[in-house]
Image (cartoon, rainbow, N blue to C red; front, side):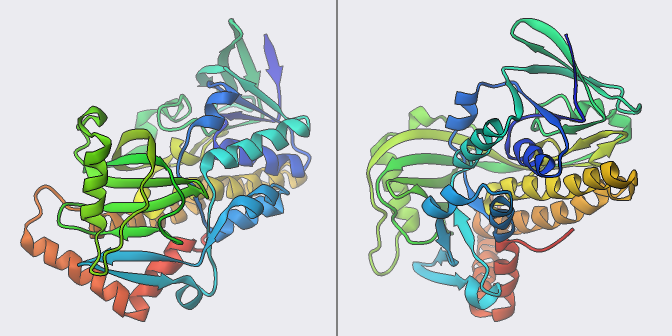
Amino acid sequence: MNHQTQIGIVGAGPAGLILSHLLRLEGIDSVVLESRSREEIESTVRAGVLEQGTVDLLVHMGLGARMIREGAVHHGIHLRFAGYTHRIDFATHADGRAITVYAQHEVIKDLVAARLATGGKILFGAKCTGVIGADGSKPTVCFTHEGREQTLHCDFIAGCDGYHGVARPAIAAAGRSDYVRIYPFGWFGILVEAPPSSDELIYAYHERGFALVSTRSPVLQRMYFQCDPKDNVDNWSDDRIWAELHTRLETKDGWKPITGKIIQKNIVGIRSFVTEPMQHGRLFLAGDAAHIVPPTGAKGLNLAAADVRVLSRGLVEFYRSGRTSTLDGYSATALRRVWRAEHFSWWMTSMLHRFPDGDKFQQRLQLSQLDYVCSSPAAAKTLAENYVGLAIG
């Protein structure tokens, strides 16, 4: 079976769904192909720290009502080390901009519901098998859906299908450069039924390793601690987890996290990845298909939104005037923000984590860096303005 559309979007993650909405606002047709079920993409709990620009974009698209109602606006973050907590104030150091904590799966729910309500076409369970003809005027996505092999013929294809998708491999290895850094540690994450332990996120440096206190809702907390990426969640009883978090988060004033029932445990590896260029012919990559950042900087979803904001502008320009200047420059424009976010995420990760080969000298350097960030207005401003999101591109 053959299908036709203007923009074929592979992947119903934040990048693909936001792009589909932005195009609809401009009268441009798209079809979204997603290999997973709607239930699966809406129930996968992932981080959701939204930059000011991402929040503004969702509001602009008319999709911000529930986010504004249920999301938690944070005007700073806490850095904790040597037993003390230091607050980085966004009002002072980031011109009053803020971040909103609103889980990614909630963003997905809002995007899917609104897209379907406006007649948008999302094919769930559509397993894409390849992208062909990206060099031509009618590139095609091949996929299977409901047991049948099918094709989607497009003017352009947006590859928003993540690191393991089919879009990036459609750009021959000889035509792209991949930049990778694998970190020698992972994050052990827990989801806890308990009210927030802190009004704002806590990033903690400890001699035993990094820890993070976040939140997902008024009744759900998300916490992490640095671990061996090859560890197994079965090695960690609830009591052992809480003991480790208490140790890494302890303060001189006796602060302790609010405990509760742990309803989810998982271990994720930490890596950095960028592919260049993010386009080939009429195929454009966005989101995790093009880049991955360590979660320390809270940039993943925000980079996806920034990518498709630039891409949508180029597509609108093409359909309105036939010009391709913005599309031609898509990769260069997007990569400016990507590499800035990669550096910031690497910097936060390097400052806050214990490295297996790190000696006491490196530990003292990390403590000195943390002290400088918390005592120098210039250093605090660098952290704050990167954290809430720079206006690049």
